[in-house]
Amino acid sequence: MANHKATQKDTRQAAKRREQNRYQAKTTRNAMRDLKAGTDATAAKKDLPGVLSKIDKLAKKGIIHKNKAANLKSALTKAVAKAS
Image 1: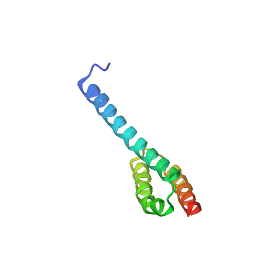
Image 2: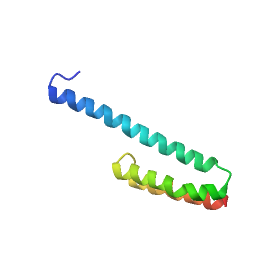
Image 3: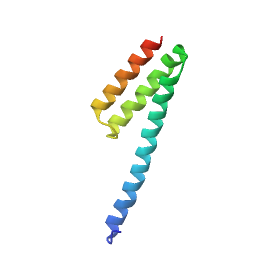
Image 4: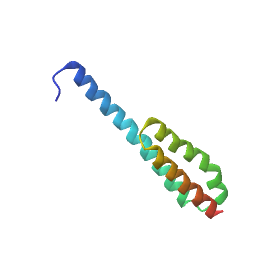
């Protein structure tokens, strides 16, 4: 464990940020999974913008790389288009 007060604070902040990032990433992965697994094409088209927005937010915050976000968005859009 760190001995300096500032380092202890930094450790607490990093743990808090890591937990928040993990929550956001997991929530987005679940939304993507639900979108792919859905059988209703109209519901998938309706939910797609929200999932794409979540992916954009992850990329903006640096949780995932911007190219990974672009690849995920492309794959989801293709999957929804194919389903309908």
